[in-house]
Length: 193
Image 1: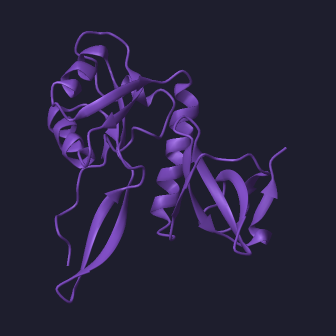
Image 2: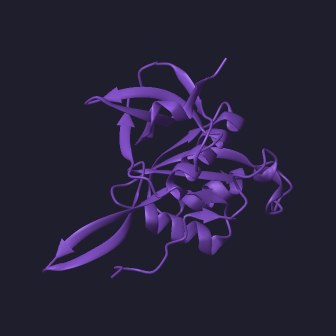
């Protein structure tokens, strides 16, 4: 039983596909170029802000993962933000101001390397789509860079971690210094040169 129906978490659906999508998906109202912004929301406002941006037609990505809980002996499934407090907006200065007007934002950070952020978000999106149990990782330490060579996660790049004797693939969003990891077998990985 789900608490709510599907929440908007990516608009438009093709936002993360191509490097040029941020500037081409929706015509900018003033002809000014779009850029990536990392939005830090007020407490528990990520999904409400995503709904406001969706209703305004502003491109954004909010990585959501399913969460299971038991309330009054009933299993309930909901979705929660993968990165608590963060939402990624791809818009013009005017659209950034529209987002600020919602009064749901604590801080907005500009992105110096938008292509790297887009690539990192695309990998996180693929990791979520694989429906593997994820573990949130903060303040990333450097390790061996690897690429998945077989299986449903083929092509993903990340860092190898070993936790409690288990090998994990860490896919990170370097801008936030956070990421998510998934348990994976060593034989599926190859070093990235």
